[in-house]
Image (cartoon, rainbow, N blue to C red):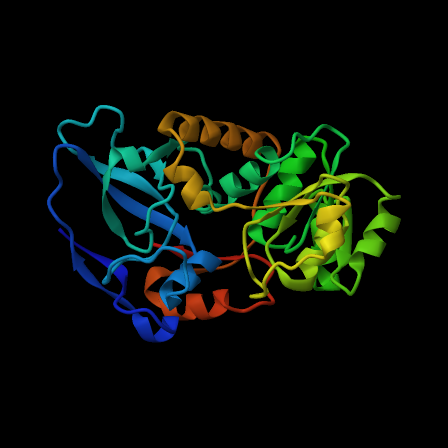
Length: 328
């Protein structure tokens, strides 16, 4: 069977190393399904991978795209747990930037057919990242506070909305004043512009609240101020490095406040977690998203064959939403 996909032939500048071209799909085995892709986002991790700057790199040539949504178009003769027409996503698996793909069923998660195609295409990476950050490091109770930078990112928006559903309060650090009202509209309690010693502003705005959890996706001075905002024995978790600067902290935070520092990578979590636990998490997340009308902002959709325009747009720092690829 012939189809089309975006092919990465070497690591480098996306516009120079990504090619939209016809591909030959292998025959469908008895234990596989054919999926017709519908939509996929362009995540920072996707761009890092294309550039050769990601934690784990694939053998080349490869089809990028670390998440997306598709419809089962055909099933192998031994498949009993998936049917033609099922809506599926692909946790922790490359290959989403394609029109069709052959998949092993153990790599798929079935979602409700009523799921919004664009929002569903972003279900496999950012929602579980936000969910695990909120639930795996600190036991948060209603009324507790957390603080995060990169609050306007997709993960940041989801953290705000998931926290609101748990009645947990959020302090959100952003770089542009234009983002303040947008984040408050989705449930942010406090939004502060990134600035020198913003930890002082945090103390004032929260009336010296005890903030148990800090979530960092920037690094550098911003991460340091996040750590300074935490209560004694607070925890800071780093899941990204948008500022391309290391996390550095003063000795006093370690000695006198006993702040602890952790890292989180959703790919490693998927790899080390039982499939039943993963499926149960997605069911819970999907229910919470639907019950609370949670969504990630989308700035623009591009057809798959416009990949260069799409990636260029996704690389812009001043965006108000995710850049999506559509396959129809």
